[in-house]
Length: 465
Image (cartoon, rainbow, N blue to C red; front, side, top):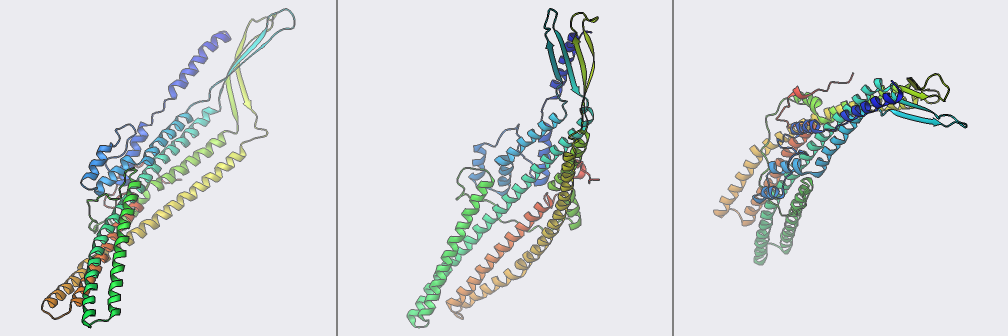
């Protein structure tokens, strides 16, 4: 076979091999990311880059009769632009993985020499492909695969953080609304108290100093009410940021109330073990270690570089052969650069990733233990206020009202009892908010809803060797 005929076969074959291996399809990565997000957030509907987007009409319908917490978290995972951008990073990572599995393009060399006298030109042709990639490509692909899995888990963690922030801000907005309602009642009560003291001052029963104190209390109550209304508006705007919406949510209505305290959760040790196995950043750190291990193997394999192919030549006139063809081998000699710097760099990077993995596991352990203890303390406070403090204050207010009706106490005594009752309502709102946030904190520390232990069958990661 002549050199020209050999090239006619080799070049199309190489082109066909490249074309057949270069397709980039991130669909499996999208599906895996959606599954991980569903586990991390407890949401059944998750954004799909290939699916329909959430329309403006659907968003307006969610706000029409008041936005519920379920609607808020649904809008967040479907509409948040940064979360959507994270899916595109999966496409980037998939493209990198496909690229890592491709061989380098072969090198084609052609040269021609013209004689200085009569005679035909001499020409030579070489077609060389990298031989060393045959043992390098597996490590390169393994590193790219680990990095792709790392991107998937980072996206799941981003979604879990987003949902946790939405729940926290939603609850804080609800608590601000409840407190503003109570503070408005306190403001009216302070106004009534100031009027009663003013009458007593006119009758000479109270001093002008007493009247000044009552007026100051009224001004303070008005300021507290206005401040709390501002807090409610602030949290509504923060909610709009988290939902990635452009419309003004300053006057939006929230339809839910602060939730009842979760009293029955799995044991702490079971939750901790599940968090270490399932939390996305723990698994992402593990995949980062694996990627670094493969990157180190790849750098070690690059010390020697070999290329192999075919070489053809037509000698000058007068030769016994018209054309020459045969195998060709090229080797890059590791004289000045033996890749030691990059190998050492990869070793440092691997050790750094291992330490980060250990740090993430330690941080997760402490976060889960701390969040679980916080939940237990919140539960105790919740039960104490609901079972002892509130009933006692309600009883005191009832007694004060009856005594006032019978003429046994003054109006100021009744108003003071009413004030203590409103203070208790504020305390109750604070306790319920703290209880709700304790569950949000625990869910975030676990990486999944505390009342939904995930199934371990989808896990493929193992602890690093």
